[in-house]
Image 1: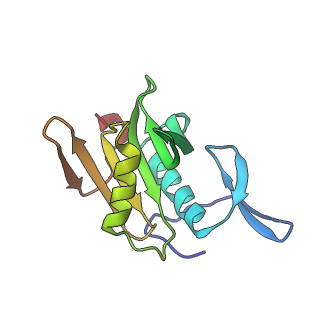
Image 2: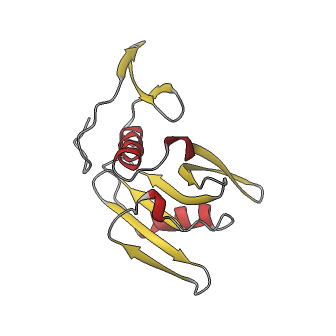
Length: 150
């Protein structure tokens, strides 16, 4: 797999039925090792090891209901009281992060009103903080530490 713009991490990887799988520590199971999954496992490990996010408050492939439309958030981070605070959209490294990707995550976030939106392809990462009172969002240089999520 491609080197990403994260620290080097060790992952449990296995091959079964000629398919490579990676262990997802959040879902507690092996999943197909796709380029997008490679990015997802890196950012999960980054959040837990570098940004002090409790693994127990991270959910993967969360079902998000938007009226009659069913959608899936790649990663959602919750507070201790169960409120969603951050949504993360992961793309494969070859996928460029465009305005359309931000529109996608903004649509997912609309009914939830999370405070942080993150988009990454493993090479480029964008994080923005939402201000719903002012109707604004501000891009910030890095993902904040878990204890500073508001």
